[in-house]
Length: 379
Ligand code: UD1
Ligand code: UDP
Image (cartoon, rainbow, N blue to C red; front, side, top):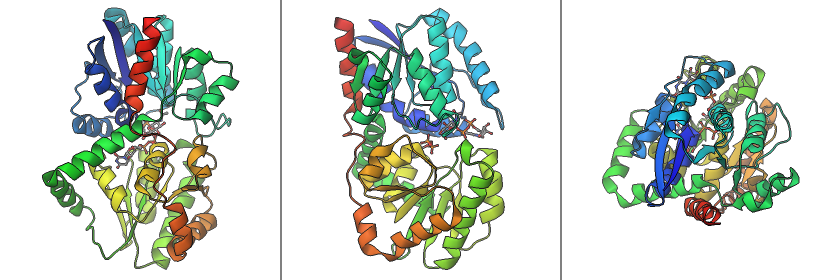
């Protein structure tokens, strides 16, 4: 039996890795253990609870307003004993977080092969997104197996000279997670009723009022970027009194501070706590459009036919831009307001961006990843 260790620590990694952990758990060829860094605490636990996952190891590293030195060093030291004691044959990491980089480095130091899920995404701007672009490039230097969600990301890896035989185009596991959540909600009327009831504590969902869903948290937007995003949201709310804006605010204090001081007290802006995955998926499915800087939401929203305005200067996910369902609007107040207003006022423009197509996956990614690993290990 192959011993595999999954390591993750933040909300998006948990959402994207949970269905993969299950796929490996169901296969007798693997002994599976899960280590969480808890780079996020509450937002990770919300997701673990939804997927009913209990970690074998919990490094519990989160500190208020932690910096990159804290996260990196605490995970490296925490993983040393676990790797030496469990001696996995392979470590699975995901994406571009500092947990993923630190776990890759720890695996490399112990000469354990790394399988990188969501490999090959690139902006080629080392400081944007920060530190994620550099994290991703460094992980791909250390990794042995590359699971690229799309051909574009696989091509990025080929251009960097990675061994072609170790690259798999497998789609993004976030689509597996999304469809799992949607199916659970659809199949279970009690769950749907509970979600609606829970949401009503924060925002009264109402068929007669449209709402814009907002999220934002990126480090490179801290400071002027976030101030601009908040100004734009305030202006949109004031110029469109019939539209609501619902913003589940990320727990990062750098986000909470500026969002609450700029946007609290406006009658059609609802600042609400981060939501459990199933609640958030349901809220996305009810929204009119989405304004975000999130990676995962750019990938999920096209499956739901929801237009996305991406409040960043560049993206490592060009596929949805090319498909015309996501638009890059930066962090300039005037541009964010103009693009949002155009979607609100111009039905043809809205229609064109609401296509339910998804370049990121078909919800079969986890099985493809498992099959690839099994084939490679049979050789
Ligand atoms: C991290 C990732 C980012 C990812 C994002 C997803 C890095 C460097 N950044 O950024 O790539 O897109 O997660 O959300 O890996 N906090 C809590 N409770 C939580 C989570 C966060 O209180 O459950 C607060 C803490 O004060 C913490 C701070 O937020 O110190 C920042 O968390 P951190 O993981 O360092 O950064 P994120 O902005 O969340
Ligand atoms: N999400 C969630 N609750 C929320 C906001 C987002 O479950 O209140 C989900 C969302 O559906 C997506 C992921 O969290 O799958 C995105 O996480 P985040 O924006 O924190 O990180 P990023 O995707 O930018 O790395």
